[in-house]
Image (cartoon, rainbow, N blue to C red; front, side, top):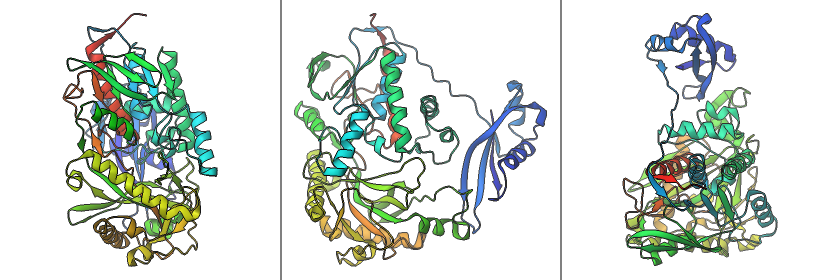
Length: 531
């Protein structure tokens, strides 16, 4: 396949124009083309009138001729197909591998293991997706929380109730395999070419269920409402796992519990394993009118039907810390994401259409091991304390209401909330609060400095009507379980730390890729038992 990049067209140009430009730049005769399509589409709005920037993929009737056209221009390159094959090893694995957690990491690890004939057992502390959706909707309507069935726990993991973003910076060839798998299970075709692909929480649910059904069809077992409660070891090697359904013989455990499995982290530490602190971030959800964000990004062209919903990603270093936006959800809503009673957590979510009135994004400040003396228990306790404060500050709005404040009020430390054009979307209701008082003073001041810098980057970011809702505490896992080059825990053979909860990913794509890496390591060593 030939990729022709950096084709810049006006908003009024048709897609066919991009194809014509690609053939001209690459000097490809039209008659040699077997297929073409838009591989990537982005918007360049840096210089007034926005431009659409295309990458066009061209496949020739004779693929052997493609290298001859690859050097026609610096914008033309040859891209081979992702060849992801795994050869099983020779050592017999006499019991099924076990996967802890059915988020993206566990799901893709289980899928590869199943395709390679290992018939894995997948443990998920929460319910299947249909029941999980009912539990989330019930919590949203009543404030009655199920600690094992919520936005953090259940089939699909925390990413199921998000924007379904697939953007990543890892640059691994396995990203292509993840995309192809999602497409095969019903994800929208556009994720193959959009610069910032997203599935949307509404469509992602069906994709996740479809992948799980493939695992089951290949002989894998998925045990819902089953938590990992202990590890059995002998001579530094894993021999079995304890669960709420009993003990299972196990020599290979994919440990992918997600970033909120605090009781599971505690179990590991009580088992004698050492976890280390890793950086994470805390802050708020910022809401603006989507139309105002697009005016700032697209200027006079805002609202043009050829333009995608406006997105932003901002960062600002303030002293030794970084204030940045995370998980921006165009046309989305702020959702109640608690997984423990008496604590409030916020997150953002969008449906595929991104048709909501508001834009929201996490605005967070980094913290690290040095803030907690390198003690992972203190890091987890810090998260919990912030969530408890948020719960108490939001109680006036009802159970699991959230504290909220206008951005201008936060900058001035006034603790006021005046609702105008920006209507808060947090589903359990909001109560006016002094958000700055909920965080350590240094972090509040750092966030204020970051927000003032954002106003210089996006006009109106700190407009009086914009709203902050708190607190956002689950940006990533606060802990890491160390693994070696063989992907096994450095303290216990047979234990394979995996994904975001174990400290090795951040988002759907990178977690899925890490799951594939772990499964590949297991497959490359072992051969599945017969029957």
